Structures are given as C-alpha cells and as structure tokens.
Image: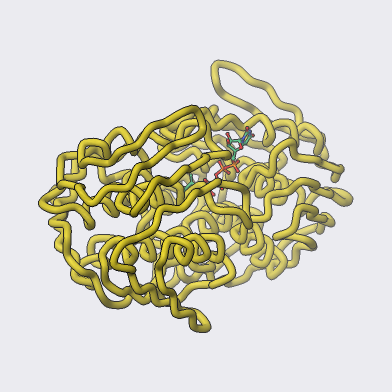
Length: 416
Ligand code: EPZ
C-alpha cells in the first residue's frame, strides 16, 4: 500500500490553486447519462472517485475521452442498467447513477452500497423517493432492481436533507411526466451546480440551493458543456494547513460564499484572513485558539471538514468541543492521531479535544478520506517524521495533493 512520509514543523508559504469539486463532479458525471449524446466537462478533478465513475460509465457502454483540460462523455450507446457490484462497493456515491439510469431508461439495478468508515450510510430516503415517483423496487440478496412503466412527478418531503437523495430525485425526475417538488431538500452548493448544468441541457429546475426544489419534467435534454465549481472542502483543507503551519497560504479559484462557515471558524481561532474576489490568504497566528464546532447541513459547518478541524484544534490553546451531527461514526481518525500525542475523549457524537503543543511524528493509518487528510494536517504540524499508510483513501478526493503541498514548501514524499 502506498504511504506518505512527512517531515513536520516547517513553515508553509505560497499559493494553492483549488481543483474542481469532487462532490459536484460525481453527480454531474452521472447526469451525462440523461442526454443521449455528448457532454463536455471542464475542471473535472483527476481523483480516484472520478476515475471509478468513468469506469462504471464505460462498463455500461459509455465512452469517456480526456483532452487536455476537458472530458468528453458520450452516453449514446449505454445498453446496460446494472451498476457493477465491485465498483458500487468501491464508491458508495455511485448510487447516484441509479437516478440517472432511471431518468433515461426507467430501469436500474444496483447492489446496496454498504456502509463505510464513517457510518452505516443507508439509502432508505433514496428508495422511498423512487417509490413516490412510481418506481417498483425489488430487492434480492442485496441487489435492488428498479423499474417503472411511467415515472410521474410527485411531492417528496425528505425526513433528512440528504445530499445524495436530493440529487437522485432531481436526476430521476428531470425527464419524467409532470412536476416534482422536493421539500426539506439539501441546500449544498454541489446541488446548485448539478442543477445549473441540467438547466443548461434544457431541464426545468427551480430552487436548487434552497430547501424547496421544483422540477418540471421535459421530453429530452441536449448536449452541453459545463465548468465544474471549485472544491470547497479541498479549499478548507488547505486553509487549515495554512493555519497549523505558522505560515501564510493563498488559495485561488474558490467561491468565498461556499467556505464562509469554515472561514468564520478560522477567524474565531485567531487566524487572519485576507479575502479577494476569488482568492483568500490565511496568515496563521502564533498559537491557534480552541473553538467549538457543530457539524450541520449546508450552510452550517460541513461534516467533511470535521476531521480536518479536529486535527487543527488538537494543537490549539485550550479545549475544543466537536459535535458531529451528520454521521454516526466520524471520529475514527482520533484514535490514530492519539499516537502522535493528540488528547481527545469521545462521548457519543461529541469529541472533547484538549489542545497541546506536544505533537510528535508517528506511524498512522488513514481511516477514510477526510480522516486521512486530518493525518496530513497533524503531520505537517508535528515535530519529526510521520508515515501515513492507506493513502488511497486520501487520493480518492484530493487532486495532486503531494505536488500542491511540495509547492508551498512541505517536506512530503509518496512511497509506493
Ligand atoms: C454527500 O454524501 C457527500 N458525498 C459526503 O461527502 C458528505 O459528507 C455528505 O453528502 C453530507 O454533506 C458526495 O457528495 C459524493 P447524505 P451523502 O445523504 O449524499 C443519512 C466526502 O468526504 N441518510 O447527505 O451520502 C446518512 O446516513 C463525502 O467527500 C439516511 O439516513 O450524504 C447521513 O447520516 C463523505 N438515509 C446523513 O443522512 C439516506 O437514504 C447525511 O447523508 C441517505 C442519507
């Protein structure tokens, strides 16, 4: 398994250009199935999860051509409606393809994505929504077959503002009969990005980014090209790296609105931030101040930044309390970080982190994507050398992370 070797304690300075958003790219790639033809995408991040999505598209008959900074996806010849189980297991979020296949063919078969490192991650909200749209579900040995003679718009209220369920309803209903209204919809910016791209293809979606989304079914969607929004979690990750490394880092190609909750918390922790139109510069304080974090659906503090902040707060002055309200098991990274001297106590959904300067390099193993990023943050702060194993988790969601870190002065090497 590949690993990162990081020599910590170095002041990091320089510029980081933020890549396209993983969590916008994945549903947008699924949405290309809805148009029987070509879609050209720009700013697609070169990360493992996107490669997996491309693998699935090719497996079911799609064609993916990469040219310089664009990707051309041709879904004219898709002829299979079963998402391969191995690829489903590699990436839970491939369940989003079900909505796209249903939207175009009224047919989809997939296996239960299964839980993962951060929680059970059920898909009951997706399945209940499919049924409300007139789709019949059959489940056998962990495989779900979806089929509908007609898909008819309906009113769907989500028990929880699930990002994936909101996206799947949009994908299933953009070309169905009648109108669909989603209430208690997720408001994440990635849903707005998906909706902007679909509307460019001729869809009629209103209200994306709010908790009420209205979709009026259209007959067909046309070819288009689309530029994917910047990754707000990658942006937050590099801001935190700037905060712990005592230096100053400028991140470019970002949407400031999307990272407001994270920026507010960094300012509360004594960081100085200079904001421009589409860049932000962080100047780290001599010592960070502990702050309390509660993860919430957007526009609250993002759960995907929880682990990364947990690492940062472990080096701050004072005690910080983190409450993880979205996933039930998103503290596994703290066990690993305790090997480096992190002092944390977990009580249910709460983690109490006592800040300390005594953080030493150690051998740790990445537990999941954002937990792995947290280990990089800790390692860049620590005195001495840290080895991070299982970095495939990290490479799922961070484009060129080794090069980007080297460019701002980090001493990091990837060992195959
Ligand atoms: C998306 O996951 C993101 N992934 C996650 O990012 C992110 O953490 C999450 O939204 C929340 O913001 C992608 O966009 C590819 P949810 P998703 O459905 O759609 C429960 C990362 O690190 N739930 O909003 O799976 C669920 O168990 C990843 O980039 C149900 O109970 O998240 C969880 O507790 C990790 N039933 C909560 O809702 C359902 O049918 C939020 O899940 C669906 C979800």
